[in-house]
Length: 304
Length: 285
View (cartoon, each protein chain N blue to C red):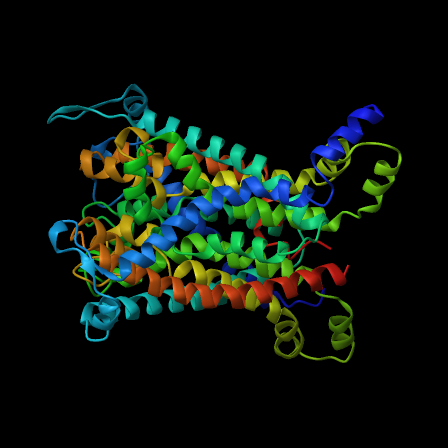
């Protein structure tokens, strides 16, 4: 490239403008997405049913105020929190246990951790369909196992008593490997000296775990748990593919409820208000997560 | 660690076997189901002895389902094509937009760069329906409803933040000194970016691209809300297929196997990259 071309290029895009020019296209694409966000806020402040367009008007926050006395809303909040809480806790415990078992680098352990990637790479909606086939009352293998164990009338996703258990099981199947990967990476990056010292002093394994492993692993545990919590409280795919929120309103988590409000009862105002409450929850969580995550990244870099 | 007791070794083995069975069994069983006729699937108790048949796959690929009750046309191949088109295009667009932006955020700390990067990341965490529902109404007005272009644009919500943040991390880890040296030797900014920065961040870009592809492929909610039958990817198509074909369980299983096979194959082929990308940049030194 000759000098003249270079100077011309420099005049065309000044070095100071360069970063803006580089990031602009990505920004423009995303700003297009911000417009619907603002629209959603606007809808949430309206009485707006698509089936009754003549009735549409601003009702300033009435949608939100009505939630306070709306049993369906409290049910949605409760189900979402129970779902998110139990999936995160169970996946964390299971993921940590698996990571501890696979900690030592060996051919078998590496092979198993690669195998465990597969559920995570399965689309959650398709995983739900797989479990739906396996829990079919006529031929499902899991229904058969339940019969063998003595539960003759275990109806999985189609009974209100066990529907939550069924979707949580699918969630655990899909997402535990994520926890495992992150915690295994954390475990393997821990410095070895404290463990060697503890082994020399004859500290028992269990105490090593509580006193050394767990505190040192805490940043990883927090990051993984927050990340999953953010995803899990918004779960839609698994629940919608499995039961569409049913039976009854047993599994009406935020996004399923909002989806059905919008498309079935065409209550746009209520749907938008629901989603904005969910957004507020995730906004707070994501801020905490990002802070944690950046600290973890700094550590990973500094420790090298 | 050599003094692990006999008991502990056995405990490990048993625990690991249970874990492998729990996580592998559903995939294994669905593959078995897809190789059976409805008669053998419906046997009670379930049994693993049967003569494998590829009829279910052939029926799906040929687009015709013949049961003893009726014959119906299905278009699952079309769903597969849609998944490929949507995922490939979304990742390509996201790479073109995201990699330069990631470079800008990593190398040039400009005014507001952190805020912009955070805003982009926050899209990843916002409830997708919040944006999708108003978007359905807008798309109908501007004629983007039910087009690949509209869908690829919305898919940027998943792909772009992912690529931006993973690739940015890689650019930050490369020392800028090499680039300065190359610049001082008289090369333009663009050729420095192309010849030095891009190849060095290559593994990161590959990891981010692969992850973005898998997430795009596995996405369900975007297409459920925005696409009609002829634009739907496999995730939505499989659900519609279950409702439509009712009791053709073998074919349903075959459709599921065909839908998850591409991502599983990719995962096995590129597991190293994936693990790095998935652990959120927490493993790199």
